[in-house]
Image (cartoon, rainbow, N blue to C red; front, side, top):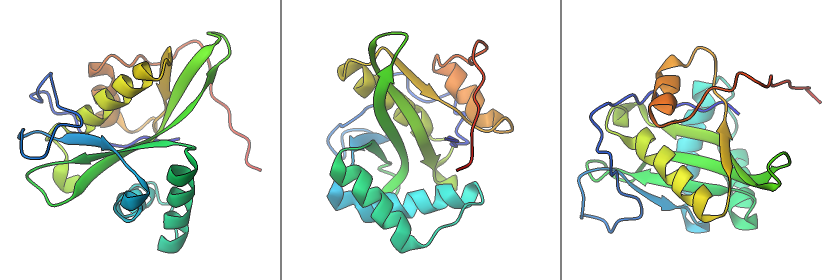
Length: 175
């Protein structure tokens, strides 16, 4: 579940708005995507897949996202920047359970900011919106993973209070 932003803005507002009405702020506005947003999310998701050298057919990407959003499997947040036309970033989270906590948890599985929008606080606004919505849903923890080489994103996560796990190792099995 690599997460990529490239956004290490240190001058982003500490009170980055989420779900604010359009035109009321100069910073990014984050809102929950609906099935009506699938094409916009698919455009961004394709950029995310390309970044990680996993290109997919546009129809497959759209079908995947339509199923996740339409079925309520994931929560997809869209970041819109008033300085741009349309969405410039997204985050996709999967609500799950933290067995050791006996409580809900969220997995921030995908996060992407368009290259032209990086450095404007978009990634930071998405991270804050994820935390806000996870708390509102009763989650006691949120987790993410990113490439070891993605130090730019790591710096952003750490600046927002995300802590690198030094207790557990992650393993994967290709099936």
